[in-house]
Structure formats: structure tokens, C-alpha cells
Length: 327
Image 1: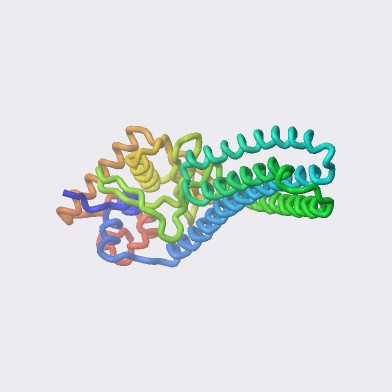
Image 2 (image 1 turned 90 degrees about the vertical axis):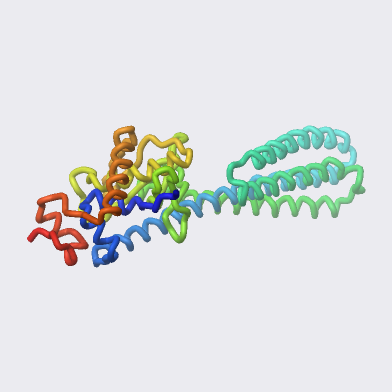
């Protein structure tokens, strides 16, 4: 029998106060503070999405630089060969060597494309560039035997080579500009690692079928072969990571691990302050035990406040409907 899913956000609410969690299940509450936090999260999510898109564009432009440079080289050599019929044998030899080099490079790109984890846009661009390289060098290699020596044709080919080199220079500029903007944004948000996931729009849910958990961290980084979930918290900055927030990050780590990822820690961010949360057996046991408690309370419906701190009640968004609130 499939377990009724419990979200990482519910685990965080339960860790804060079981009664607050229970009241939220009955009627979800909004507040000005919560709405402000959602706006801040949305702004950061948009920035992170922009970083990913800029890096992808930079990668695409780099491929165009390679492709245009290869084709420009081919046309340049072809133009030189057409200008001097006496040196055709030497040019043919040079073209032969270059053709081998370029074709090996193109085959390598095709191999990378076939092995790429992302089989979508980047793979198609690599195949496109590699195919262009092969075709261009085959044309250059056979041009002397196919075309008659023609000075006008030589000049046309050289102009084409120049235009392609200008295009390659422009593509290089666009690539550098996109990379520079992405790097500046990464520094602003202190991003250390490759952004693999951003909670924006309708991203996929992380899930653990074994424990019946689901959730969406604010973003996930790939660092040294590991997946690192990151959760951002708005509002006041505590002196250390709060227990309820640690539980939430632990839940994300657990779900990623259940999906087969290598996970040793997660990150909690309060503004510019960052805390690394180690995902060890103790935290995993703590998360799963809290989930078991929550399922038991869902069966009994007997849920009560678990603290005696008036200040905590004052900051609770469910305070207005709470029958056990402290004055």
C-alpha cells in the first residue's frame, strides 16, 4: 500500500511545532511575511535560472566559434590553392595532413556527443559542428581536382573565409560576455558548483517511495560528483541553523539519496550566511523518526504544542487559530 506523501515543508513545520503543522493541514495560512519570503525566493530562482541559461548560451557560442573557425580555415586554404597552380601538389599535401587532424577532431566531437549525459541541445550542436567540419575539410581536400584554377574564384573564397572569421570573432565575444555575466551572478549568490535544479515554474518533485516523502529544494548543486540540496530562509538570521530547518534539508538529502545520488551534506542559507548540514546516519534516523511520528498523529488526530516559549508563538503564522497559543 502506497504511503500518503509527506512534504519536506510539512516536516519543517512539524519540527517547528506539531500543532502549527496540524493547523496548516486543516487550513493553509498566508501572511505578509510569508508572501515576502516567496517573492525573495522567486527573485533568487529567476537569477539562478538566468545563470544556467547564460552558461548554456556561452557553450553554444563556443561551438559556433569552433565550427566557423574550421570552415574558415578550409576556405582559406582552398583560396590559397586556387591562387597558385604551381604549388598545387604542396597545397594538396598540406590539405591532406590538415584534413586528417580536423577529421580526428570532428570524430572526437561526435564521440563526446554520443557519450553526453544531456542528449538534447548540446549534443545536437556538437553533431552539427562535427558534421560541418568533416564536410568542409572533404571539400577542401578535393577542391584542386574538382575546380579549375580561377583567380576570381580564389578571391571569392578568401572573402568567404574572412567573413567566417569575423563571425567566429563575434561568436567568441558573445560567448565571453555571456560567461562573464553568469560568473558575476554566481559570485553575487555565492554559488559554488554546477546548478542542476532550480525550484522555478513546475520542476520535478524529489521523491522517496520508501518513506513516502516529496519536496522541492530551492536549488541543487553538483559538487565533486555529489548532489547538494540548498534551502534558503528569509526573515531574521538566527545564530545557528534551526532544528526545523535542519530536518527539512535532511529530508531533501534523504530523497536525493533514495533516487541514487551521492549525498554527504546539504546547505542552509540565511541571507549571506551559509551553514553546511552533514547528512549522516543520525540525521537520516531523525528525519525518518519524525516522519513516523507525523503518520501516527495523522491517525490519532491528537496533536499538541510541544514548547513553552511565548516568543515562538508570537512569530507563528498559525497563531490566530491556535487553541494552545501562549500569551
